[in-house]
Length: 191
Image 1 (cartoon, one colour):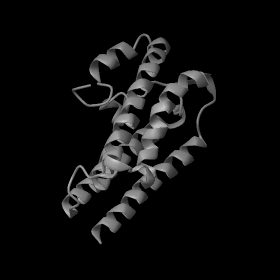
Image 2: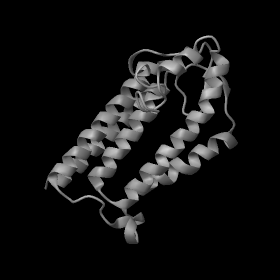
Image 3: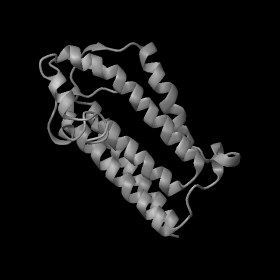
Image 4: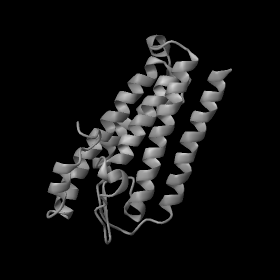
């Protein structure tokens, strides 16, 4: 019974995040420059199968469908809490970034370097929040397919960070290097 409630609440967290994304897409600045589809495809090569492993139970074939944690209420609730925290952090970051946001590596007209709110905690808090939410969902579902999905999603964001950092250094050469030294990319104080 608790598993069904946890699954429903996890779905609500992800849907809420999606609604914030869609709403925010309506108010972005005009694009000044953006990465090519070819450059974006490397990120997509990892993230799409990563999310598919979560979305489609049918991919839980063989060992991928086996559990890596026991199916207990405690584990499910911990997964829910982590998912909600990650969705909240990503939403906060998306709202804070405002009209500067883009789904691909992009510079907007009048692009601003945002260093407040969650951007004072990590340089890429949207990715931190999404990886955290994916980790929580993986824990709640508890199957190996989700851990593989988590690794793929995390790798996709590491790839995207490596694509974004040179763009930010070029766009903000006077302030980005100091910001980069002061604030870690994904995990506060570590990475």
